[in-house]
Length: 204
Image (cartoon, rainbow, N blue to C red; front, side):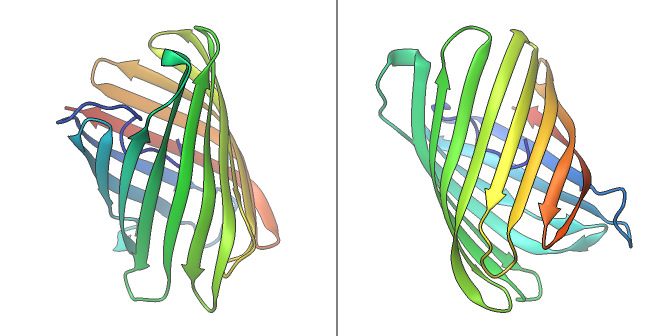
């Protein structure tokens, strides 16, 4: 939910999605709503692009784009893999980053699946550094329209401090609409606290 894909791996050509992630830390002062409307399009079977506009309250924080591809995989419909390259630059030029990730997902039963995004980030803020990135999620699917998950995000220290987020979440799908919502704990730059997040998605 927090660190998402450019459409699911294996998506078909012509799929289009608009969505936005919203994040809020109740204990933070001054309070900020971080949100990021984006549009995703699959231009070839298994290959997609994304354009995103990260915002802080009503102001533009950065510009962001990504490209993603699906790789051939073994084990039929129980395993899928791919890659993603993502770039971001600050609206005022105060930071930039490039992520390169290997993606892998496995489903061993109708009810349980896992997904991972592993790679590195080259970031520039006050200094430049290359750091490890890891996103690892476990999902339980009690029925087709409902999914429960536990997402973990880890970033190495780098130029913008080490970070960790653990986010339990629920996904509810209604035809072409998908609501994902969760509340978890975030550690960053020596501080920690509750973070609330939700993502609303519309597929076309």
